[in-house]
Amino acid sequence: MTALRKTAVALISDAAPFVIRAERASDVVAREALLDACFGLNRHTRTCQRLRDGSAPAEGLAFSVVRQGRLIGTVRLWHVSAGGNPALVLGPLAVDASYRELGIGAALMNHALAAAKARGHGAVILLGDAPYYARFGFSALKTGELSLPGPFERDRLLGIELREGALDDAWGVIAPLGAAAPLGNLRPARRTRKSAPRAA
Ligand SMILES: CC(C)(COP(=O)(O)OP(=O)(O)OC[C@H]1O[C@@H](n2cnc3c(N)ncnc32)[C@H](O)[C@@H]1OP(=O)(O)O)[C@@H](O)C(=O)NCCC(=O)NCCS
Image (cartoon, rainbow, N blue to C red; front, top):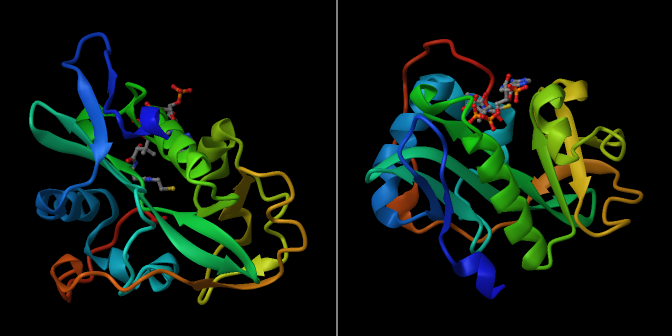
């Protein structure tokens, strides 16, 4: 636990160091701008957003990647009930387009999963591209009987057990379970309809 509270630093060639640290209130504006750029302004209408609306992320499980004082990556995890099994939903995960393919996404995923495990969480679920998330151990092996509160693509509903058996017999609709978000952290209302990549 102590090690996970330390700031993680990675050095990469051809780029300045980046830092993975706990998200701060002062990150919110830059985080939202990054997510708008990555997923488009209609991202709030996606099914996974129904699991996050009005909730705060799970304690200690919201991370920012910062390079030279600028936020270039984000990931958060949220409490859900996966058909009665307590679990976390991960997302959205995003890295600034200028800094992709440098291992930042992998560093952020590994950091987040290690932190979730260290905090005693048993399983993480997400809606995303299997070819990307398989490298971290995600698969559809134990999510076949789960669904989301809205339209989703079955082959993108993936899970990983951080504790063996945590998703055994998981069945039913995944539902939010988190604490209410502080008012200042709620997203602003959006009305634009620009299309974009599918958000996790
Ligand atoms: C997905 C994302 C976070 C990866 O960040 P990153 O810092 O570039 O990731 P890494 O450098 O650790 O890994 C890059 C590798 O992932 C692969 N990859 C990236 N996105 C992928 C995808 N959707 N499907 C399959 N592979 C993918 C790259 O091809 C590269 O492969 P390689 O290691 O064989 O060269 C970033 O591309 C991003 O923010 N995309 C837009 C938002 C998004 O799609 N988020 C995920 C929702 S499903």
